[in-house]
Length: 234
Image (cartoon, rainbow, N blue to C red):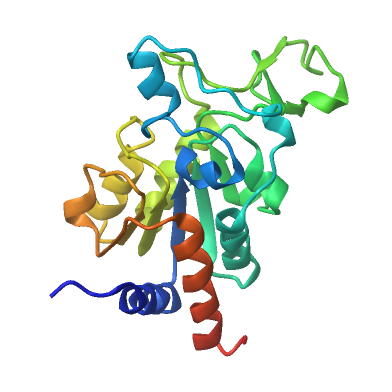
């Protein structure tokens, strides 16, 4: 019999409580509740592109958007010592803006607020005003276009932490773009439990221990609140 929503939240909180190595993975779906477009939703960037339509318009530049409840729930997991690592496909900077520590984050597709040295790979904030790296290399946009290689350090860390995870939570991703989508595969092959929160289907749905189709803002904050009660923090 299908579990109801509250039972699934309870099960999710218990998985979070018992796990020793939590890795979260986020896609564009976590940022739609901040007002940003996703990629493969009904009005997503790639959906529109495939129909020959221009990208969806936003009412302000991307760097002015703010994190939402989903982002802050992941920060809460970090702050209570549960989150070991966060892998993101997003370039919108909202995880760092929400308070995620940079050493716990791999941004597989770069970040619109960062520049990367073409020589040594060092990352600079755009706001610093540099055009060349201290090694002499040219500073280029850190965001990754189709066909470009992913940043080596971030990719290596993503693989490493996915293999260590005993709970892998995929949030707001269709899990079809590789090599990013290799991460849940790595985790499953190393015996982890998988939770997926995404409104559209994913190829990993048959392997999920828990599968939520509800909005991220309705799932993550609730599960984290219940976890804090189990931990005696509320």
